[in-house]
Image (tube, rainbow, N blue to C red; front, side, top):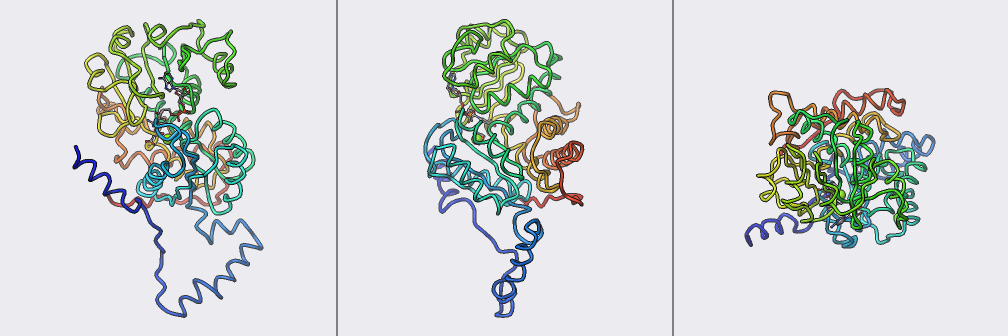
Length: 401
Ligand SMILES: NC(=O)c1ccc[n+]([C@@H]2O[C@H](COP(=O)([O-])OP(=O)(O)OC[C@H]3O[C@@H](n4cnc5c(N)ncnc54)[C@H](O)[C@@H]3O)[C@@H](O)[C@H]2O)c1
Ligand SMILES: O=C(O)C[C@H](O)C(=O)O
Ligand SMILES: [Mg+2]
């Protein structure tokens, strides 16, 4: 065990990334072109037409991964410095899987006004903003305001990236079990950033019987919640207005989706579910139930981790979504683009390949980023949010592993 920890630590020594120039400057003449005085010509070209930033700077391929360190994985509010290894990791994944240059930016503030202000002020350098691990409900306001005020895509990965991969996983898990979205009872644990967005996505995909459970139990109508988003949530979910604990409402459920914290689902809970239970225990780094405990009692099991089969993790989504959005200069990432991304991920597994232990493609499956990128561009064009005159046939430059 300690050698594994040593190995992990070694991979993090000095951070996980660096900046590399595209061309090395070897001579004074070269210097005069890349830097002053030559660079001044380019600056003035952009000053006269700021849209030229897409042609003449890193903007067209660059995403800011912005966090305030308040909901880092399931570790909670561990602060901006401690959030950096996750944000560096996301930046590495952006580059490796989709050729996107991403910068980890951890802010020393939790104030939504300040976060919105800072992100707006740094936006000129970036082609997109990936918000990460900002706790709910502040994340909803931050994202809404930034989407309204910026003309580059703003995407809160924990909400929408997760919703996209959950949709993909559920589409395929239901195929394995021979069940339909319209007929299944779905119980969510954790109605924060991820739970809220995943619920919305599944309702859009046709689920009718969906119940959300948080620390106070099932979210239902007739209660005054301190979280203003839960009243709205109660109105759109829980058709029979059930109250009670997770164990109370999970009885007879076809699907459990956990985006909460570790060890809150029991084997007895799973045994009370309908036949062929589907369990997505996605809390990181420790899922809602130990997968080894759950496995004998479920038909389909998925976690957010890479060390078990069926990893349902937003890494399947954010590289391809941003690759597509950047390549077509999308001004936003809309619902149609997210839905298209989810279906594209599901579609990366052929009917012959589909099984209980293979409902979701592996992130190393080269089809995933390409399919997501193409589907996102198609949806952006169809919904009129793509600004690019010409879209590269394949904007991918994934590094070899
Ligand atoms: N696999 C993935 O791709 C993926 C993506 C996003 C989030 N997650 C995981 O989901 C979890 C939540 O992330 P988030 O960004 O939504 O955070 P969040 O802080 O916005 O929301 C977490 C919610 O879970 C609730 N919760 C926590 N412990 C609970 C418990 N014991 N019982 C009931 N409710 C509980 C909290 O009250 C909160 O409403 C984290 O563990 C995160 O790692 C996984
Ligand atoms: O970071 C991950 O691996 C997934 C997700 O964004 C999370 O917060 O857990
Ligand atoms: Mg996250």
